[in-house]
Every structure is written in C-alpha cells, then in structure tokens.
Length: 217
Length: 217
DNA sequence: ATAGATTTTTTTGTATACAAGAAGGTTGAC
DNA sequence: GTCAACCTTCTTGTATACAAAAAAATCTAT
Image 1 (cartoon, rainbow over the protein chains, first blue to last red):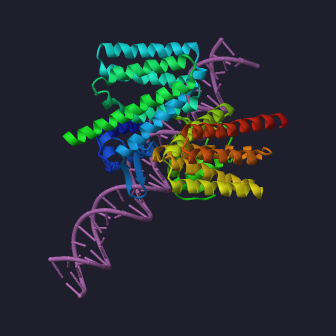
Image 2: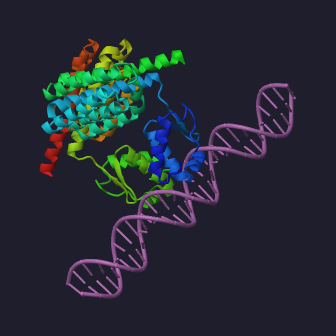
Image 3: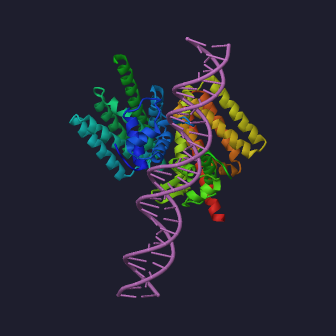
C-alpha cells in the first residue's frame, strides 16, 4: 500500500484497524507507517490524530498512539447507543418524512427483500445499510443524521457478522416491514420502539456470536 | 496569549471560537496563529485539525480552515439531538441507577435549588450542568455518557443565554424535580419524556432569545 | 548475581525548509 | 475600458532537521 495524501492514509489506517489488522493495545509506529505508505511522518501523524479523535485509538502523550479495539462491554454500549439514535431518527421520520422519502425507504426495503430472496448476505448487508440511512435522512435533522452515520460507520465491521445467524436475515426483513409501516402511519412512538428493538437485537446477536466463538475457539 | 503545547493551543482556540472571537466563515490563518501563540505552524495545524474534527471549523483542501459557527437551524438540530440523547440516558438511568447514584442526583438538584434561592444564575448554570451529568452517569453506559458529555460541551455557550429569561430558572428547577421523581420511581418512559421536553424547551427558549435579539439589534 | 544508577538509543513533539497549488495583481490585446 | 492570460505572491501540505523525553541497555557497587 503506497498512498500519498494524509486523509487517504487516515482512511487506509481505519480500514486496517477495522479489519483487525492490529491488535488491541498495539502501538502504531509512526516511522514504520511512514515507510509503509512511503511518506514522511507528518501526514502519518495527522492520520493518527484522526484515529484518536474518532475513538479508534488512544494517545498517551510522549508515548505514542495505541489502537483501541472495543471490548464486548463497549461494543454492547455502542449498539445500545446506536439503537437510541435510530429510535430518535425513527420518531422524527414518522412525523416529518415526505412522501418522496417514504418511497425511497420502501424501495430500499424492496432491495433488501430481493437480496434475501436470492440469499445474498453481502447484498443484504449493503442494502440494509442504505435502508437505515434513509431513516436517518428522513429525520430531517442534519446534525442527528450525521451522528447516526458516524456511529453506523463505526459499528460497520461488527454488524456484518451477526447476519451469519441462521434465519437472521428473514427476521431482520420482517422487522423492517414493521418499521416502514410505523413510519408510514406516522406513529412516532411505534416507529421509535420498533427500531430500537431492531438494533438492540443486532447487538445481542453479535454478543451471542462472540460468546460462541470464544467457546469453540 | 502565549501557550506552548498543541493540545493547549487547541483548547485556547476552542475557547476563542466559543466566545465568538471569530466570525463565521473566517479563515484561521496558520501563520498568524503561530505568531500569536509563539510556536511554529506544526502544533497550530494539529490544533486546527482538532477543531475541524469536532465540527467547530471546516477544512477546504489547499484553501485553509474556516470557523463554522452554527446557524439557528443547526443549533436547533443540536438541541433536538441533545434532547434525544438525554432522553435515552434518562430511560436507562431509571432502570439502572443505583441508590448511590440517585442520592448524588438529588444532591445535585438540591444545589440547583440553593442557587435559585440565592438568585445565582451563574451558579445555577454550573450546578445544572452537573445535575445532567449525573443522569448521563446513571445511564451506566460509558459510551453514551461520553457522547452526551461531548454534545453538552459543544452546546455550552448557547445554553447559558437562555437562563436570562425571566422565571426560566424556577421553571427549569421544577422540571428537574419531575425528572428526579421519574427516575427514582423507575419509570423509564416518563423520565425519558420529561427530560426530552426539558432540553427541548432550552432550545426553543434559545431560539426565542435569538429572534428577539435580532429584532432589537 | 542483582539492584540501582548512568549512559545510550529510540521515539515523540516542534521547528524549519521546501514543493505545489491557489489567490491576486499586472500586463497586453481587443 | 474591459476581459483574459500570465506572472508574482501567498498559503497550504509535506519533508527533513532538531530537541526533549521516555525506554532500553550497560555499567557499577554491594
């Protein structure tokens, strides 16, 4: 990997951390990274700062920056927070979404359904992401929307695994239907509640899967 | 102002932006800032990056970073988001807060009451902040807690002005009482609803005040 | 041989130097 | 006189150089 600009390096580093390329607590060596990307330390340091400020790494002054892979507890906390953000988006969406927005949401869900029908887990993953993003957008609150997008992106690598549960995709789709109905009918409380549970389940499934992997090695 | 370390410069800059020292859209000149703080451009650039990533400034590549004072719309959006975060904290707090935590919350509210009684607006402002922080803490979700703290800090300069409304302090205090009661009784839905409205009112009061100031000059 | 002190080495943080792109001004053509 | 092309200047972004602090290694005394 030989990129040039600082923000590209930051993105590449995020990807590497996401993909579990680095272990928790591992120090990110400025010099080695500079050599790896064939740049000087300056843009590497900028990229590292971005990682730190996004919470993916921790900086200890005069010691370096260390990757911070969230443990099971923090992950559950993040899913829980995501559930609340989405619940908020859903409540606003139910009250504010335009017909146009609801159409987009329905179409996104149709694409989810199509992915399930052709048993395309990867496709479902992508379309599911877009489905949720339509809800963020429907909240008609750019700030909240961006916060939701930020956390969604941060949880990306962990959401992926839970689709491996047998029958999870179909269940997820059914939940989507309920969400769309609630938003369409303008029932904010219901939309909020349904979305919260939908996301919370994701976190719980993830936890189950992790626990299982730990046992079986 | 002549500081030395990068993070101190970032803090100082945040303060300057908060205090309205810089107008919206104004470019933050690296060289001038470096001279001002009597350091080289390097730590200044690090500080500017922090501002950008925290949303207080915008960076245009090869052009510079420009301060981004939130307009009325974005501020309302931020207050709305804050309300939702606090509502979430309140709901969790109602379910999870320990007796110890409830004691701390009550005490914080007592200090608010004391500030109101001695008509100490500045004191109320500080104690009110701590009161809300006890709720974040009571959510027993470190991630959510930190998100709430982050936004609370970002809204700090705007929350201050709304206390200038006549009778607002007393009303705020009354709302606090209802919040404490709801949490104490373990009624998550009520706690969440009450908190949401409490924070939403802050945003609306702020808007009213701003509109008023605009008219009178 | 081991614990502590001292020196060496490594690494972060800051300053300066340099390169490349953008803004602004000047000159020239119509 | 105005518009456009070119050139100058200024600013950002990156590379290198240097300083200071922490980690590692060596040495000494008991």
